[in-house]
Length: 457
Image (cartoon, rainbow, N blue to C red; front, side):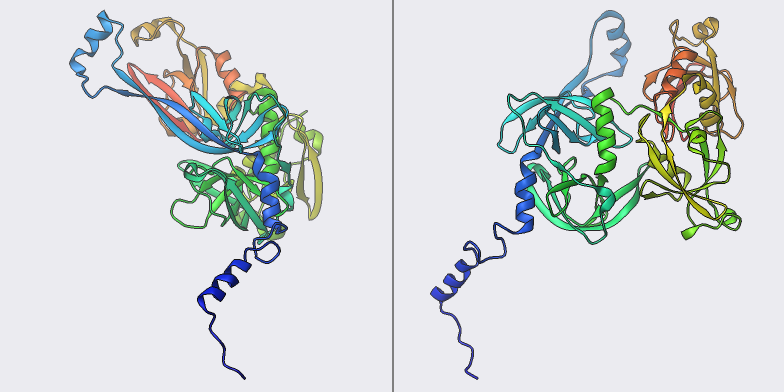
């Protein structure tokens, strides 16, 4: 056999050049990844959010605070603009609707969208939901914009090739590839648990938030939303089937309306599994069904074990509430349940939250009942007239009792909104997500406290 001959410099250069000739190299125009990127990238945008940040002047002297308040309309807080970058996906090119993450635009005073052709547009937030970390913004363009093609996240498989497009660190339209590493992932951020995420090893960096995760055909299968800070090659994305439900609700109503199922569930513990054996040993057991509720109409019964919400397996009470919270009133879900050894599929359509049950729900889930404020107590505690409601009852062992609520305390705010009457509390409870920790401002004598209540099941 003749010995291998080394290529001379000119021959080596020619061989390298041939790799990039049309039809010769790996990155060909008909490569599936290239085609997918070409199809989807015009619908991926860069989002710049301007936030007004207030801070106290470093020259401030607390001694003069009362003087300035009493005699001058003086504000020693410094206001500064802070910019943040994110990504978004055009989901309706005619209406100018763009889907992104809630945290990208949550505190923005100004939002600017830069299209793939580098045109800039001011944007307004149509609706935003912190629970799902999704938001829809809108721009006004003179012509129809490129629109992303929808995929089906329920059909994803572990190991499937995926493509991420976004603007990490402001680097417009960066493309990375990887695979679906896991489905239905749960992770924790501070005190909040997030369920049902897609895990991928496609590189997702700051600025990718709100960008597109695509399948190999260039269809949108998820919204990139987070990176795992203590590891490399681990990113999370919101499945697009969930994101579409939330986006439709945000466009129509500006918020995710709370829905009512009319049932209570409990995690299937090891002790309960002995009496309710189910495939895989995971699920939630139905512990209560309210009369004339959507759950009752769907045919659910006490001791049914719910295994899945649509295609999403549920293994805990928290997981069940997370899986159902993004189904607005009227949007039906399919529950896979086991009853006395038989597998059933039941259609459940949530209803609007009944406002007349709101106070009752606050007592059962948060653990307190309120009455109108006593004017004499308001004066003695330095409260302006008409502010707050009086906590009249605290249920023992409830979340409110655990953080120290007592009858006679004054509730001032729930979920960052003022509460000045029992009707206000009822309105708020009918609108907020009581399956997540909720911030509460309470006053006792002349001291105010901010606490977080984790609702009971």
